Length: 239
Image (tube, rainbow, N blue to C red; front, side, top):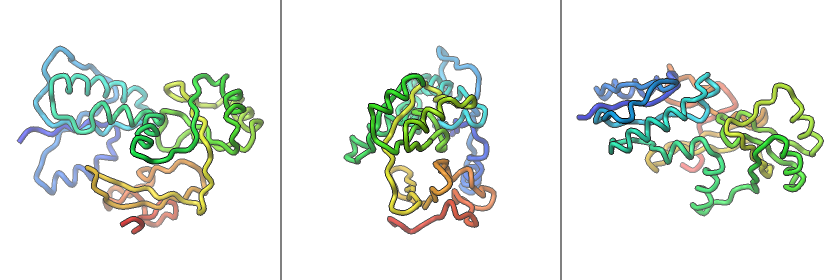
């Protein structure tokens, strides 16, 4: 059997994966990608490479991990190595606009969305967008960070004057129609290999940071939530 190499930048996310490999009697190597060198003109080991890189890597101090991963995947794929979650997946991971395009191609509706490059362009773009309330979010973000709702252009203008304002990593802001939910939660469906696994009900009353992994009790069970919390709840919806 060929070696397995897990490409990642978040040690905590690998805890349940390591346990699953241990139970199966499989040893997997881990390649922590934060910074380093890609020996592009050399031949990589013939292994199965499992890419776990995340768009939110910068929130853990790994600002250029996706860029390094892109270089690594380019190297691996040019040498015809087996890659799970290849460059196309990484490109989707770090670009919300590409995700919306994929949803549209699958026949799903997406909210009205405009992309804006340059903070100084946002006010005029929002006035032209003219759909209130609206959401402002980074095109490349992660975990719901940087997503803000505004009910009027004056609120947006005040927000943009903040000294601690974090601009999107790729310089691209998204203006998006706000969809008022009938109830204060979203339902997040999880799939692996196009196979449905489970759904998580996520309470949205406290904002848009809706990543269940940050609420996880990973040392106790596989579930992506702490079941004592009322923010994330495993549900039978869509089962």
